[in-house]
Length: 461
Ligand code: MN
Ligand code: MN
Image 1 (cartoon, rainbow, N blue to C red):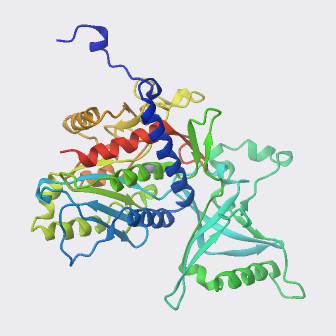
Image 2: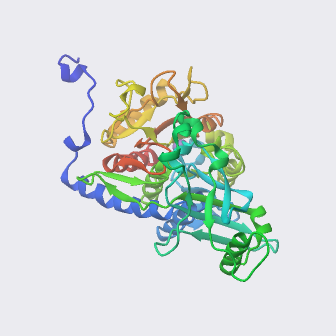
Image 3: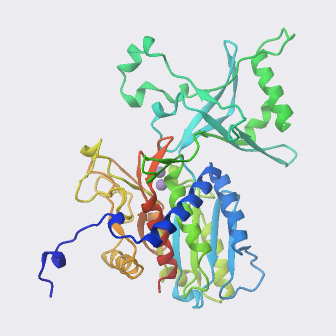
């Protein structure tokens, strides 16, 4: 029977007060790896490529649906270069279900329009269409880099990469000078920077000796053609993303935090990956999902709603003569997406009793959504209980993470799409400060704890 206040009260502890020296070192090693990954994984395609490169180094092979599959096998399948599915085959039958960790590798950004290039008053520009939930005022007057692919008429594909190398030029979206911004400053934040003004400055020099129109545009096209062999029409079949060119850095005098772009949700994606890389011969098959398109509703062929997931899982089940639906029915999924970290500068949006804080561990959420939990997965008590058990057994520090006060706003994850598949699913991830900003902050100890959490999920029985 519980009698003392220690036994009766639920109290949360700062990780720093409970973690040992050996684990602190492990956390530092882990976070250095994560920072390296984040620096390379600037887009969903680049995250996919880096994850595959690392997976190969950890003994993973591309899944061959015609080859035999046995316990201990390590496989991956890249879905159109933008979604990644990996698995370590367990000792037990897939009929007993699998343990899934599902994160996403797309992040808010500025996509180039399909006819982006124009010249206005002797400056060449690229028009953009923002992707995901951005606060538009945060994307002006910061250094930007471009990444993506151009699919040529020949069937060949060209990779675009401008600005990532420190010797490259960066790109830029302008804003008004304060001297002349009196009217703009009276606008609500959401309206002060209209989407059609998020135009990227691409160049300012005309072609010398040319007397035709649009000489600056012609000059940048010449540069692009020389570098990539492309012409203006090729933008039609291109997918080019402008992302912040800020380097990933340690943050805080005590170096306790990490600043970087796209930590929603690459911080959980990497936790899942590193944990899976280190899993060998688990009881149940461990599956890592890195989905695309979460930030715009998990849509499309590479989003979590896509049957690409069923295709991969179904192929594995067929190898063991197991019905896919029976495997899914017995499976368990953690939707690993970032939580909101309490921000003491903006306390008014949080319910202090239910919010996640920096350095208190992986944040778990029974539900997300908005209003009356609309658009959420709302995990059952039993599923929450199972997760508590898994984390307690593996000594994982966790905390509860509700996304802000009721009726303050809200958000979603891939959790409901896993729930739709008849898979028990719950949300858990790293708390983030300034989520969706061009530069986001997380605490190193929370990153490490989330990696430990993912490993515990893969190894759970
Ligand atoms: Mn997310
Ligand atoms: Mn997000």
